[in-house]
Image (cartoon, rainbow, N blue to C red; front, side):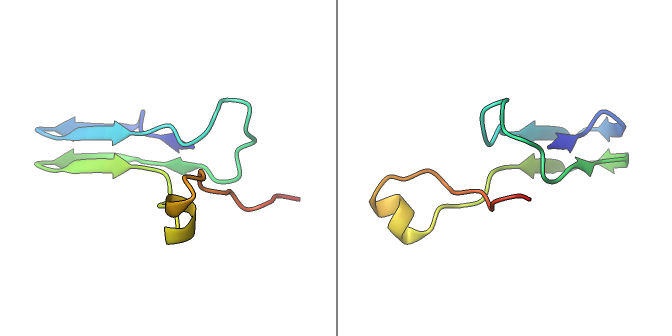
Length: 65
């Protein structure tokens, strides 16, 4: 989960792609805080391996305790 509410943007943009469905438990939370000028922040899910891509399988998330 990425929280960019406290990030102040100046001539910048933030692009966050949802990685999973809303029912998935959160294992990592990243808070973006500060000021960003003249740039962009892109948050996206991890890439699939070649085998997953070839078989058209979604990325697998690590199992949590």
